[in-house]
Length: 208
Ligand SMILES: CCCCCCCC/C=C\CCCCCCCC(=O)SCCNC(=O)CCNC(=O)[C@H](O)C(C)(C)COP(=O)(O)OP(=O)(O)OC[C@H]1O[C@@H](n2cnc3c(N)ncnc32)[C@H](O)[C@@H]1OP(=O)(O)O
Image (cartoon, rainbow, N blue to C red; front, side):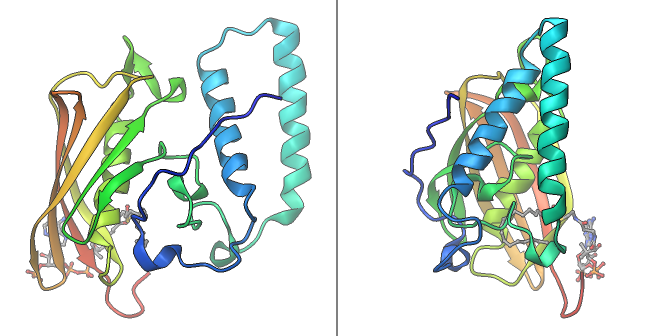
């Protein structure tokens, strides 16, 4: 089976969260997530012959049944909590490859695969705030108590092409007590495709 090369050029966007001596799922968890993403892009971009559709449907059902007995509580799950890996070991948001990240700003690269296709070669409009929420929350939560998105305003300025490397810049505008205001931009080369403004509010003790 072909596999996706993931590389390891990222700086460490999640700071101390990445310090896990023996991460659950081991070294192969990155390959698991990468191959699952590859599958989603392959399905999203294909017109499969009917017999292959039947076979793949059976194979996926079999795989799901094989994994089902290993379901755990949220606090035990691995996907999304592998802060040592690009993409945190999750497959909902495209992998953000961070080139710069600290508590004030960040810059990362990403590509929307065909899984995220809306129409006309552009990413689905809902996928854009998904990326902003991920990118802005990485900066908002960096070296600060945990914060949640209170609002996220997105302006769509130009179509966001799929299968094309894009870049995101994030900047903390200001911090006022529990409130952290940020801005972000999603760019294709010199073209500003979308911009975001968000408020993240630090959780109080015991707040879910
Ligand atoms: C869970 C975080 C995970 C971190 C992981 C570690 C770091 C890893 C980094 C990266 C990994 C990526 C992880 C992805 C996660 C991304 C984040 C999300 O998507 S979170 C899901 C979507 N968001 C919600 O579900 C919020 C739902 N809302 C709430 O829970 C509350 O409304 C909350 C916490 C936002 C605020 O509620 P209150 O009761 O604590 O506080 P009040 O008093 O209402 O607000 C505090 C101040 O904020 C203002 N405020 C609140 N909401 C506002 C709004 N919508 N617009 C304007 N101001 C607002 C208020 O006016 C107040 O201001 P004044 O102190 O009086 O000056």
